[in-house]
Length: 133
Image (cartoon, rainbow, N blue to C red; front, side, top):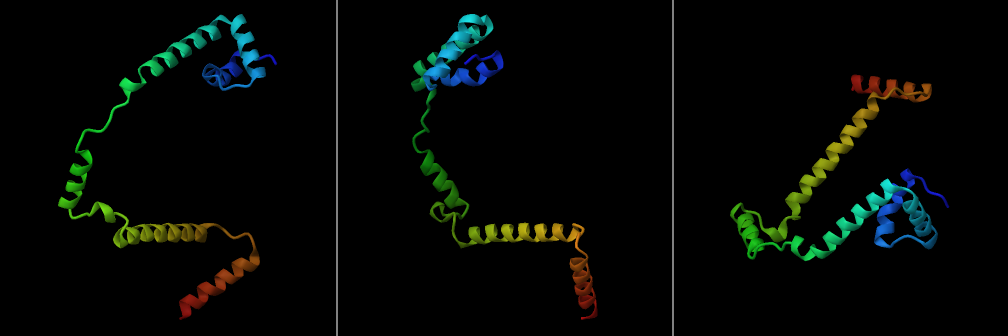
């Protein structure tokens, strides 16, 4: 398998992680031994991955103590119980949004011209019935 520089772009990240099969790893390695710009890109990728691995603990931040209790207190001040955020009023607003979406979709379908003359005649007949009653 012979890879070009464009193909190396997609194979390089899994190759650097050691997540490629042996055939692809050999092909990537062969390309990197011949192409200086791709080899330099691979070196930059290795350096970045090594740096992230060594500094992972420093990059991971934990939430400050008491954040959850402050959020719950704030929600209670506004009259919302954090345990009941999916209570009936919230479900009702979601249901109303879904119903509005269905109405918009049906309304949009009304604007689409009908191709069938039988369907068009039925629509005209329904429109006349609506006007008379």
